[in-house]
Amino acid sequence: MFALDIIVKKRNGEKLTKEEIKYFIDGYTNGGIPDYQASAFLMATYFKGMDAEETLWLTEAMLHSGDVVDLSCIPGIKVDKHSTGGVGDKTTLVIAPIVASCGVPVAKMSGRGLGHTGGTIDKLESIPGFRTSLSPTEFIANVKEIGIAVAGQTGNLAPADKKLYALRDVTGTVEDVSLIAASIMSKKLASGSDAIVLDVKIGSGAFMKSFEDARKLARTMVDIGHGAGKKTIAILTDMDRPLGNNIGNALEVSEAVEVLKGKGGDDLREVCIELAANMLFLAGKCDIEACRKQVIDAIDNRTALNKLIQMVERQGGDPKAIEDTTRLPQASVKVEWKSDMSGYIEKMHAEKLGIASLILGAGRKNKDDVIDPSAGIVLCKKPGDKVEAGQTLAILHTSDNERVMEALYVLKTAISISKTPVPRNPLILGKVQ
Image (tube, rainbow, N blue to C red; front, side, top):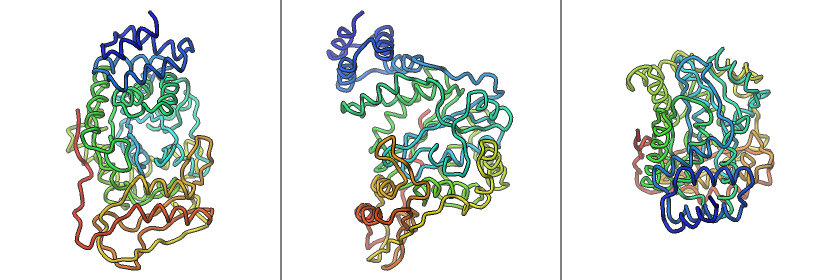
């Protein structure tokens, strides 16, 4: 078997065998197949595509290119959640303690942010003292003893994905559904959970801009999950606007805490309730309506908030920063951006808002950039809201005053105001199961 033959076969639009895909992925992972041949393989796949069976085989090859976490020693059905990324998406901070407080163990491995979307690990590290680097033994012990652990990816999970993703990023082959789905699902399956809820974002702040593309990706990932013997559901959610009011690491932790206190933005609460309820449903707790009620009860009686406090303390963080979020990092510079006209907020371009937050210091342009945990944006208005001239649209938070003008320049292109009332679009756009 030769790499060139596999490349030519896919270039000609033929279906690859399971053995051919495994041979190519193994060869590239161990260095036997060079970057230039892997680039040709990715481009051939981009233009000719893979069917559902090939995509499953690609995922399995990438999954088994490294370690697979064994969570079998943890009692109960373990349910994982993955979001395809968005602006203001702090759902893990809300739903993980909710689900754990309802008796379903959450063993969550999360990533860092790059570009305009934030990462759960960066958000958690804005809590003073919080440790996201846990040994496998400590990670499993936390889940067994308190029902929850959220940590950075450890070990050698799906190394083929790491190599292929870096290559896709520089060869113009990122936007292929099979490659995206295999990348996401190889890591989710390697994380060891029994079931997976996928939050597939759609809109200006998401990777998938159209409903049709998002639904296709959701269908592909759900089919991979089923093919791997995992219960899998995808929820399609809106990302034409930021989720919640706060964008930025400490700011998002603060808003997540507010939701767990029964406050916070209605949009964030709605999406979190739906995702958490589906996680409970996959764990076999009860029917979906009863699961929604359990989730709401866990918020209302503050058992979910107490679970978050317990997790923070267990992972070395300051629990008082959850009880009193003013103890989280605070920006030294806060600038209000006011509306110069009256009307109704028509659109909020989520990606541009994410970029403005990045400029203020909340994100990374390069993987080695240092994040300012206090930086970000607090939105005072959302799409559909009425606004008067002179009212504050947003408050910019940063520790570097020189960043403000550049961020404001981007913000002014991100929000449009209509003279007539604007309908509020739904947040939950569909489900694939």
